[in-house]
Image 1 (tube, one colour):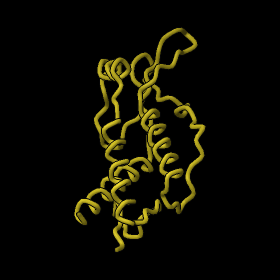
Image 2: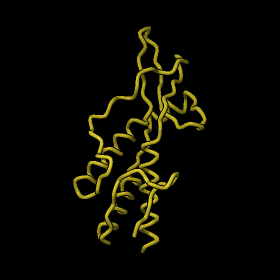
Image 3: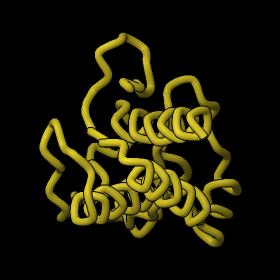
Length: 149
């Protein structure tokens, strides 16, 4: 059971760290110039820096993760001359997508319901076991999460 909880914390921590990592936008298609416009701003307020997860903060966390997933979806920008520019985010070091790959993502956006369900399940297991889950930056450099029994 303890190894499942630790693995769950690492999964949750890894997802949160990747959510907090720096993001960059890439433009594809009609214009080779990267868009200066950021992704649409979120209407969600960020959780405080050190947040204990309970029912209400868990709902806020999952809403923020859903919003972050939405911001990673490609979008089409109409240029003043009538052409379209396709903009998407990618992590540093990832290869650029072709125009056809971006269009395929627009037609068939990924669903992260399985990942969200796994996070809900891990958090429920931790809550049932009496563990206190805090959202904060790990103290150990490079760690995705920490277990402090």
